[in-house]
Length: 99
Image 1 (spheres, rainbow, N blue to C red):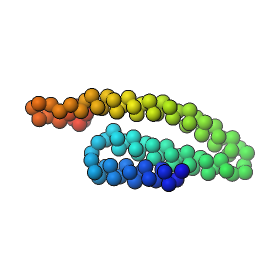
Image 2: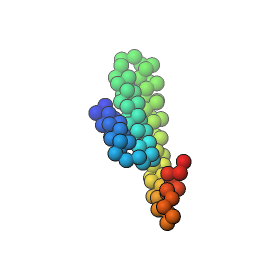
Image 3: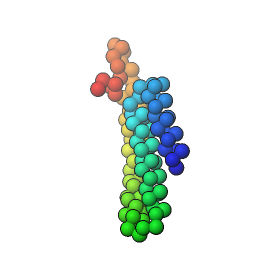
Image 4: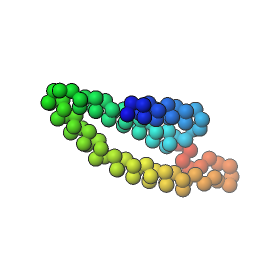
């Protein structure tokens, strides 16, 4: 789990250097942080303390229940970003890059 999270964070850095698409960078960064949090919580879950185990399992269940909404949100952002990436005829930047 740590390897996957760190590889996503390294992928974020490479995407940031390679091209400046903020939405994709934000998604990769968020996924990396999400996996790091889950990995740390899984390490805490392995402790013998019963209170830590109960609290950690509750937080893990909460995070994993939010995962489908996260994936649906990413899909909606990609669809909306794809519709706004049409190049203007006058050479102006696409609407997603005018922040």
